[in-house]
Length: 384
Ligand SMILES: [Zn+2]
Image (cartoon, rainbow, N blue to C red; front, side, top):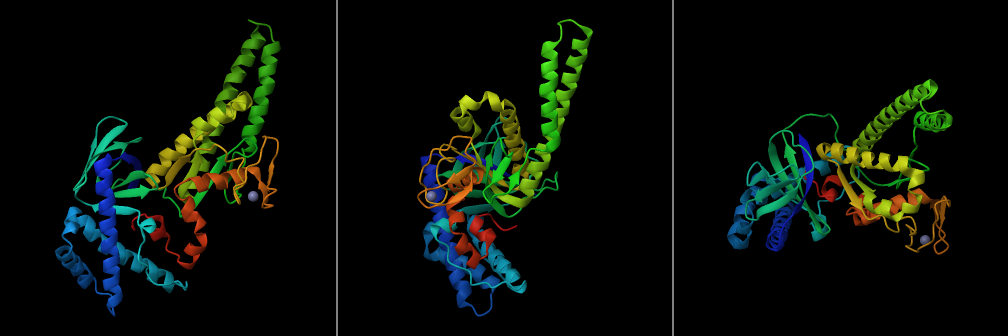
């Protein structure tokens, strides 16, 4: 099964309809959970039947596509199964909890109730029963037939996750949630402090490139030696491009395999911000763009969400207390004189990037999550 995450743009009425559908589905989930708790032994049939009862008592539930409402029973039992799996594995677990608004972030159209229609390469519409035709921004080819559509609410944005029966890659997203800072010193730094360095071979090639460029500039125009050097330069450029591609492929695969959510900087803004340094890092710039492009492309089908945030101030703000400090590029260590935190400047930036994303607040409740280890539920993704 392949997953594709696309942003959608509901209009005002559609937004209101979606909000209502989310509220009613959440209401149903909680009512079914209540029913489940009342039972001595879980009785799936009785829980299912409860939906019919609810619909009779609350006619407004008919505003939600019926199978979307029924999905809540599936969700409940999936969560229950996940919980008992943890228990079997010797983990200390609590009970299923009623869901507040913040913990209820998806509704699901399974098998029916939706039509996905591609308009152009980048535009499509999704018809959702009882909601309407919503504009979709697509950025990639979809492999396979769509079997399920998950509508996701994330802060003030809306997404659909198309799940198809296509098969093309063995790459599947992991469980981690990270923020990454793209830099010059290290290629990238994660919020947990893990750094990915530029590969040594690439650095060596780049050094070689500089030397060859210098030689070329000293050689007489039109001379045979100059032509030879030109050829060498070309080959070196190719070699560097290949090494960079390899590096990017490996790094992105690794990140996706470990994570289901990755917060990155919006490069357009970052570039604008740091324009004075641009020449010095021209090479890094090109590579970042390609890195993000490949990351997004692969993440889409692997079920990993890549979110871009505004990077302004992420280097200057203390990720612990929020105080702002001037941080010229040569200062590598972030030292906060307000809360006395001290860490690598890139890691500090990566934490801020994660905090700015939709998963930021979730992350802040890490303690909460430890006591209640239901990643699937907390992430808002539907169970597989
Ligand atoms: Zn601080």
